[in-house]
Length: 149
Ligand SMILES: [Zn+2]
Image (spheres, rainbow, N blue to C red):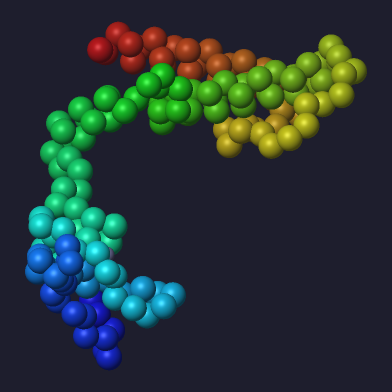
């Protein structure tokens, strides 16, 4: 897409006037001048490699995408599933702290800061009972899911 008024120069003389090649048609936002680099050979829109002229834009098939993801995963510490599990564990810890305060087990100061998205405040003894019932329910669900596999 080119804005009206800007007509890009399509050819470029380089190597002291010895080589004539296609010129990158990108226009600078700052200076309004055309990019001075030669266009990439694999580019379909006459752009240099800095302005989107690379031929490949990554793997397309599901298999290829998975292979690249596996190659780039180092520890798996920041995968979606791991982060979700960490978030749930963090919420459970915060609820356990709530339960200790509700049951009068501690007078310690509360942990400050942002709570996990899964955190639901526990404010009563009934809430403490419900929290432990939910935990048992999730444990049963998790074990039944592992049987399915
Ligand atoms: Zn360029």
